[in-house]
Length: 121
Image (cartoon, rainbow, N blue to C red; front, side, top):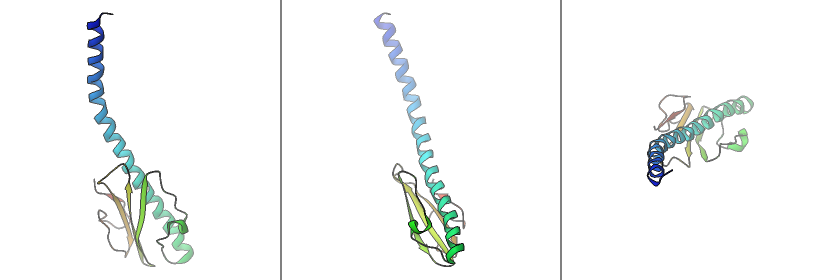
């Protein structure tokens, strides 16, 4: 190969990388958001099981047996015998969050529909 041919190949690889990297970044963000949503759905199932045993919801994640995904922080904002609300953040997403509320709990942003996981994106 001549030096010019090698230079052309390097330029083509650079162009392909410039196209692929932004696509990979958005896919990665979608995966982080999906992990936060999945954790909130798992928490909802565990809260229902806990309620069936104790007739009340709880803010204690270990009491319901919840284990979150890597990088996801889940916090139960409110829990009574009438409802509960929680939020989830992923460390890889600086400004995105997901939330859910159930029953008569206070609505948490960005959740707008009871018992439905919603995200700010």
